[in-house]
Image 1: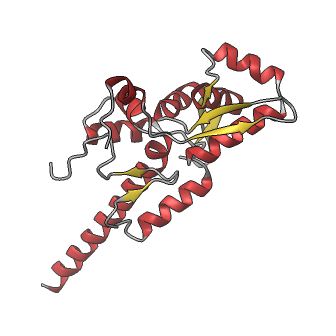
Image 2: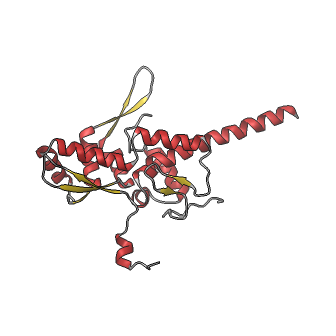
Image 3: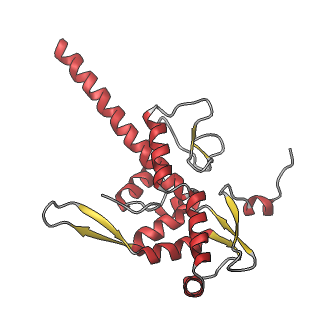
Length: 155
Length: 65
């Protein structure tokens, strides 16, 4: 087994990446990556508005879909990497079908859609226990020895 | 509360940060959106159901005594 260099280790990521072919609209492809939790934190604060139904008191988070998509591209498009939200907005204004393709692929590989929620819920319904630990919906493992987070189980 | 996919409500984020002894920022930097918004919430819902099951068992056992 090769020992990683510090640069290789610091540059490593266990997020899923995929190439998106933008033809025929644009001659070329881009590379996207599954969304990190940083996206979730930013999306929650930047694009959600809480709306309370006056009759039932039920709260629903109303999302600015455009802002959500912009953040998805900002965090999910890795090659080429856009530097800021203004560049993302410029891209959104200039492309149509390609934008949708990029967003769709990011959502697919990120495991945050309804399908992923249902699959994960089913795992926990059945106990979710196996020798290999719990697997995330996007194929990554969580809670096993590959996890970056040290979760204490007894304290 | 209904949330769009890939987002998390601030209370759940704080609860997770507390359990993992991390800051919210650390959560963002150290896991995927799938783990934060799909896997952990599903785990907490399972744990809640499990605790409720245990409480019902204890209540039943106490009634029999």
